[in-house]
Amino acid sequence: MPQYVLIVDDDPVTRQALALLLNAEGYVVAEAADGAAALAKLRSGRPPQLVLLDLMMPVMDGWRFLAERQHLPALAAIPVLVLTAARGIDGPALRAMGAEDILQKPVAPEDVVTAVRRYC
Image (cartoon, rainbow, N blue to C red):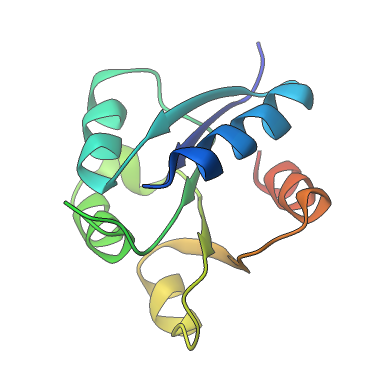
């Protein structure tokens, strides 16, 4: 069964580019436009092997998603890879909230694939 990855980003172009990249590598991909939509997907369907998470989003940002996810034991075990354009991010704080790694946007496609392979 192919590995399943959830992409959470408010920018549809970014989501589509990541989805195309990962589909080409053999991953099954689902998308969510914000943290609230991602939590709804996680609660209602097959759990992914990895979540790719943007931090700066409307409705529910990535920080809030990570905080909410910690209260749900079945979801807290899913690795999260943060992809963000924000500068000066507190890496230790993100890791304490459950982020496995942080990639700074813009990120090279091969770096995304390498990171996804590491956690899937």
